Length: 537
Image (cartoon, rainbow, N blue to C red; front, side, top):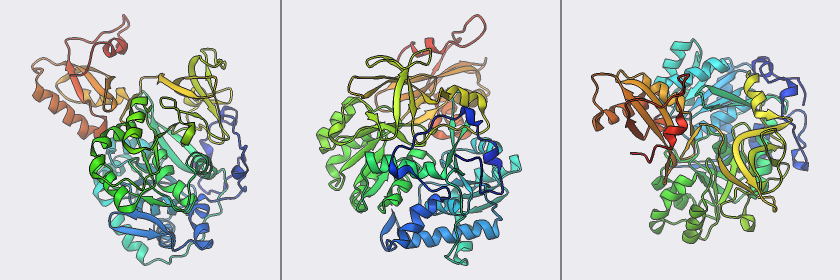
């Protein structure tokens, strides 16, 4: 991997971790031998049209179907708006903010074409989180759904960044006047093309850095080998394109294999089932929570087109796998991936699936479990999961976290696993205090900070509490200030307050009022004691 870059703005290249802190990369498959100069958008979209696939459907949405040619034309026009009207310089970061939609997909591809670096965020995030992203990545540009304009404007005003921004309605109007031809920037395969933010247990965002080659590698491993994607496929699911899980499943994989993506703006059980029936989806991507929510509704829905179901975001219980198989005849493909690794690296499909096991390392990946001295353990042992392959962790400007995640060339994910004699890996637990709820990673301290902003809260601590439907929920233990009574009405007030402060999905679904929090002699809250204190109220 070269230290060169095709970018005029070298911000990202300058903030890659030192080379000696990178994980070991493996490119053992012929399909992973990419040319030195390569733009992932060229391979995903332009080449499809050049190969005569322009009339094939690329994206289905509620009110629009876009062919490959139409998607290419729209992406080219948006790329011209970025470069000609907004002055995008290669290497500039571009905030993308929208529910899953054809416009978001076209904008992401336009950023790739123009040599920008995409920072795609979930629509649920608030201005407080956008400010963190903008400052850390020094984001100059933003393209967004008009309904989300207020938080972008607030973040821009409070940071002095995001100064070159357009809502989708204005972007569409500007794009209509542009030529639908664009010469893609001749990027290097090792140029950063996306920053994917992930929050640690402190709630402080970490930016993971991925190259053009990484975008194709996740397709050429996961999309090709695990999913065996074909041009006739139509992929639908719940993850937002702001998650790398969603980016791969609902844009990169289908485009790479000339299939089609079905984008659902509000992916609740009803809308997902409707989209499967209407657009004849062949593969569904979602979390175990959603599979459990879908099962009672299957009798009234047509899912006969489905032949694959994929789960990620949290461990898939064997009971959920068995129940889904009993109702549909389809065995769910489980997988573990991380934002740091961009997508799934352990999984199994077809007859290789063992309910309860995540699976085996995918082609070009290796995995083991480490003991406390960072040494591989034999089969049957429990330890920290360690992985290496064609993708890997590169934290932006964060040597401390890089050193913690990458150990002797291995990516150590923070998950506890065991592996058996047959090479299958079985999830045991999270190794940190991250709360994984319905597939979302939620940092407890971030929720605590939000609660402490309310006048009624003197102290609080947030932990994961087991929940049958969501895996875990966020539970808060709250010590009230004098003059405030521990009522059900106050629970609702505090929950609403958190929803208005940070992303609504992070709010505490259970709140228990206590007289004091358990602490060590040094004043540190003993969260393990709170986790052991009982079921949520």
